[in-house]
Length: 93
Image (cartoon, rainbow, N blue to C red; front, side, top):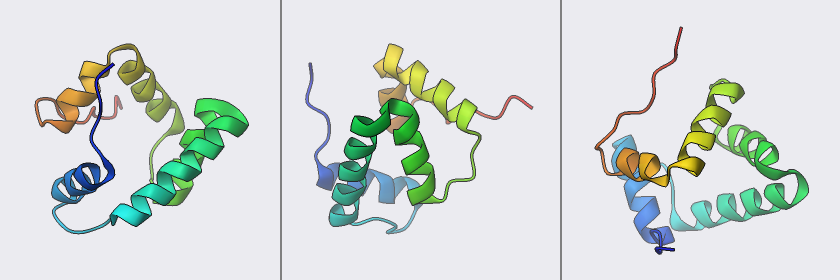
């Protein structure tokens, strides 16, 4: 399996996508560690709950779960999104 971006690269990517510095490498490390612990406790559902709490994201959990499942079954979707080749899916409403 290919190696993904390191914390520095991922932090830069997130900050670039947001158009401002919203995250440090240390914060990303803490978030990832929390997500790992959540996964150990309750699987992907717990990870999504944790991330929604930490980021204060105003998203529908079912939509987020559907998106996570699509990336899990086809990782290229996630890479295309990160590389700007694909837009973030819009709400179906």
